[in-house]
Every structure is written in C-alpha cells, then in structure tokens.
Length: 226
Image (tube, rainbow, N blue to C red):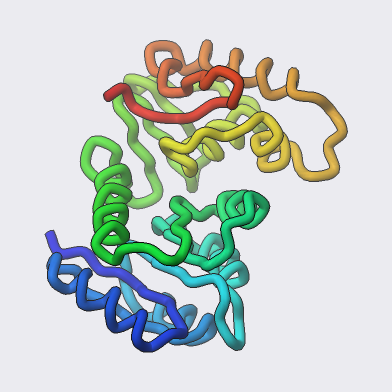
C-alpha cells in the first residue's frame, strides 16, 4: 500500500533531499515551505503522515501541529535543530508522535516514519475514528471503550488518561507529563492521582490492562507486548 507524507520544511535543499529518500521507498510526497502552505495542503489532501520542521517563516511548527491536532490524529514527526527537553515535551504535549533533532540521516528518518506507520496500522489499527489495540477498541467520536466487545464504564478522567496513553504509543510518559495532559497545568495535586487512576484503569481494562506498563523510576507507557 502506497503511503503519503506531507513534508513541511523551509530549507529547499533539505526538503528536496528528504523527498528523494521517501520517494525511493515508494512514498507519495506533498511539500510545503511554510506553515500556512502546509495547512492548505493538509486541508486539501489525504496524507498518512506529517513531517514537520519547527523553525519556519509565517507560522512555526508548534502552531501547525496544534492546528492539525484540532482536526486530525494523523501521525506527526517533528524535526528541529533544538535539543532542549522542554521543546520535546512541548511537542508531545501538542500531540506529536516522534521528535527528531538535526542533523539526522534522511534514511533513518524514513525508517522511523515507516516504523511509526506500522504502529498505527494493522493490528494496531485505526478504523475511521476507532483505535484498535488487541482486544481493546476506542471509538473517539462516541467516547466509548470496549474490551472483547464488552462496553466499559470509564470515568471522564479515565477515558482522557487512556487516550493520552494511546496517542503517545510506545513513549514513556512521566507522571508530571500525565498530570499536565489530563488534569491541566493549573492542577496542584501530586503524583498519587496518576497512580490511582492508572490502577483503576488497568482493573477496568481487564485482560488488556497490561497494555499500560510501568517503567520503573520513569512513569508509564502504552504498548502491545512484543
């Protein structure tokens, strides 16, 4: 199956270089040189993946990422010359799936894009607005969750927590990150709120509770068993 990518990069030579590598792997490539053009192309085209530079004229990558996430859960890879942890955290909080720092090998970027697509297709599937992981199914429009076909009674916070974990598939999320994403930046509680809700959520997920894994001294991540 041929995949399509929206490549958003203001450096023409870099954009051409990356495009060539993706085309060699049979990707269809849409190119944008700034944020506004990227949003126009995204609105008019069906793309499977967005590769998005941060530092751009007219509209930066953060703004583009935020606007795309308001309308779509398409996988997004952010590329940037900045390496600060705060920048990476910002990207993940805005809903990015991967974060690649310059300089990087275009060959490696294509490999990471391919791996990301495999995580969001097939057994880890997206069926319209439904996310499927093993026997777990999440309908984002209806805000319903089923395991083995049985409807679960999740609280709004448990549902939000599950969705945050799913949209950061394979990424270790700290308790602080989860607090900010689910409870908001102005929440003054402590990490026990996260641990308590994770425990309750796992119990309700039953046989699929193991999808949420504890990473010692780091936090939690959502991932199918290898």
